[in-house]
Structure formats: C-alpha cells, structure tokens
Amino acid sequence: MTQRLNFGDTAAAKGSVVNVNHYGDGTGNTASPGQTYGLDIHNYPGSQSALVIHQYSSLARAIALDNTGTQPMVEIHNTQNLVLNPGSDGTGDFILLRDHGTAVFRIDKDLVFRLGGTKVPTFLHTAAKALSVQTASGYNGDTMDITKAGTGSGNGLKVNNSGTGIGVYIAQTGAGKALQIDANTASNAGVFTSLIQGYDYGPSFSTAADSGVTLTVTKNGTGAGAVQQIVNKGTGDSLQLRDASAQKFTVSAVGGITVINGVSVNIIAGTGSPEGARSAPVGSVYLRSDGGAATSLYIKETGTGNTGWVAK
Image 1 (cartoon, rainbow, N blue to C red):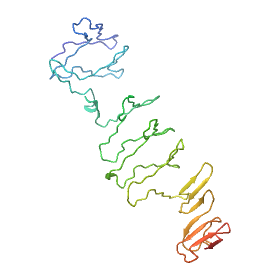
Image 2 (image 1 turned 60 degrees about the vertical axis):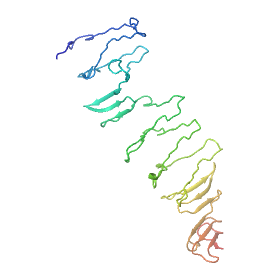
Image 3 (image 1 turned 30 degrees about the vertical axis):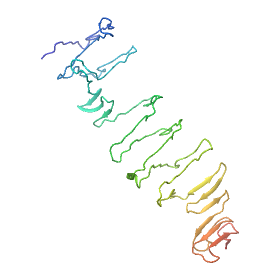
Image 4 (image 1 turned 135 degrees about the horizontal axis):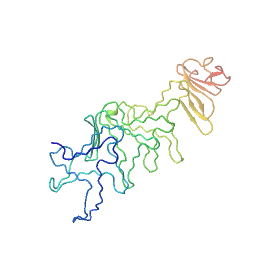
C-alpha cells in the first residue's frame, strides 16, 4: 500500500513541512473535564508501530521538544481502553532503547531499569554533581540498594577517585551507624570482612567528643583465633601509644617493649646472656628463656651500650 499522505520539501526550503496549531482547551466536550488532542493516533491490536521516525541527518536531532508551560513535556502511562481492554491496564514497557536491534535499556511497567548488551550507563556532568539520590522526609526505608546477583569476583560497588577529595564520604546526622559491614555467614569463613590498603598511611580513627570509646574490637566467637593481629614486615615500631605531647608506650618491630609511660626503657627476651650482646637504656629488663637460677632475669644497671647487665 502506498502512503495515504506524503509530505516533502526541498533542501533549501524554509519553515516546517507540517505545522499543527492546537488551541482547544476541552471546554467543547460534553465529558468533564473535556479532552482534546493536537494529534491523536490510535494503534490497534495487531498493528505495527504507530509512529516511526528515521533519522538520516547528522545536522540536527530528529525530535525537539520545547516546553514553555507548567505541565509535563512527555507523559507515558499504561492505561485501559474501555472498548479494547476494559478492566485491565496495559503491560508494555514505558521506554525501550535499542542499538542495532539489541535492547540495551528499558524501563518496564514496574519501574525496573533493565540493561542489556554491552552498554554501561554513565552519569557525566562537567560542572556539578553527576548523580543525586534522595528520598522524602517521611520515608524511612533504604535510599539505595545495590544487589549483585552473580557469584563471581566482580565488585558490588567501585569508586574511582582521581581528585584530592574523599572517595566515599558519609555524613551521619542521625542516631544510626555511619557504616556497618555484615559478612557473618558461613560462606565468609576465612575471608576478611574488609581490606584497607594505603601507601604511607592506613586508616585513621578519631572522635569529636570524649564520652565514648574511639575504637572497640569485639570477638564474639569462642574459638582460638586472635582478637587482634599486627603483622610488621618493616623496621618501624609495631605499636605506639601516644598522648597529645609524647610517645607513652611502644612495641618494636621485633616484639620488645621500648617505651613505658613515656620513658625509654626496654623489656626484651631472648637466649644467652645479654651482657655484651644487647644494647638498652639503664633500667631495662631482659628475660632469658634458657637461663637458670639467678640467670633468668637481667637488669641493665649501668652504661649506654650493651654492657652493664646484672643477673638477678
């Protein structure tokens, strides 16, 4: 069948090929409220697409919508037709985008965003936030839920931050926890709940007030696993306790205590006599594991080097 209506112009033509001016406000209809359309297309069951636009030009978009009013520019809704499908709404998708025939993005009737093919949705803004997710003040459920259904090694959430700001920032103003990680099922056995890797520095914990505990480590299991483990592969101290002014307690990389109450004295252990072999400040203690009576405990009483040890 040939076209019922065929409109065309020339390349140098000016103005619109078809122009529709619609002024009807619905008052002429008997139904209340009245309803009129500038263009009304009915696509009946069994028919193909009601409107198809083929874009061949690279000069401008195929469709341009200018909204100067207060009503929505576009409204898409599933509804019923009292003659064709009375009593039931349509079930088609609201929006479907295809790339070479492959469905790459669609919003279905349940407002589920579905992706297909190899396309990755990207939110890009050059001068402001790329994405803002908000809920109403009266809603108390989750603001965002990310579910990874696959069991592979891909990340559930990945943030690449090339700037000097914080990669993930949580501003907690309510009474809830700012961050909670639950990985307490049997499938997580033998796996660290979280892994934080830094270059020069690791995590930093601080509190604004003095009424609570800055860091609490609780082991709820009754097994033999350690509550806390520090693995030191360098030569720096394994543990330092400080106040606002000075170092108060230190455990060295080899496991000896080198500072107590801010004073540089050592508590160390080993085999053999420390005299001539172990350097330490006066007042230090040496525990000899292969010693005997009067040779298992040594006190550094004199000297600044490895001499001055007296067995007790």
